[in-house]
Image: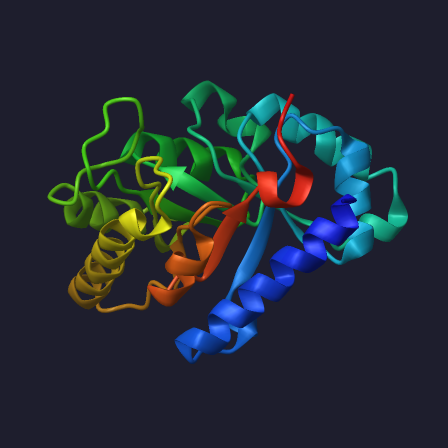
Length: 229
């Protein structure tokens, strides 16, 4: 299958999952995770209809932004940074992406605000709901206080939460994590007395379950681009 074929198949599955959940397809943004794939793959996916692309590595993001800028017909692409970000790489991301998905410290949010050059940088709070030591993110207990501090930083707009469940061959195994993130988002939004509209959760193996649980952004790599080399 070509990237265009895979994109159409993923889009159809997202639309079907939205129908089952009683939600309009416009509620869900498909982020095509292009990490480690060449810029030609980004161009092919964009030609098929993809508009939002996710990268995990700051330098790779910067390189692809520069390459895509040379193709005028791709000017509508929106970039997302979805990986863990070191503070010393914030300058490569801040002000260059539509959304930073994995902010886990107030210090990183501060650095993004400083590097955003006067623009408003939307971010999500990364939450580690099952305590996996190999993954970043604050705990559910820490999340409300960290969210409150991040939301108070000028130049930063806290738009919601993101998470990544443990890998599993059973997509339903992710459901308790997705439901917990939605409940936590609702709790924090109530405490802050402001909307937190974005739930970034779900990948190639479990995005349909994530949509059923309220995901607004699904991060899909393999199902669109194929396996990474």
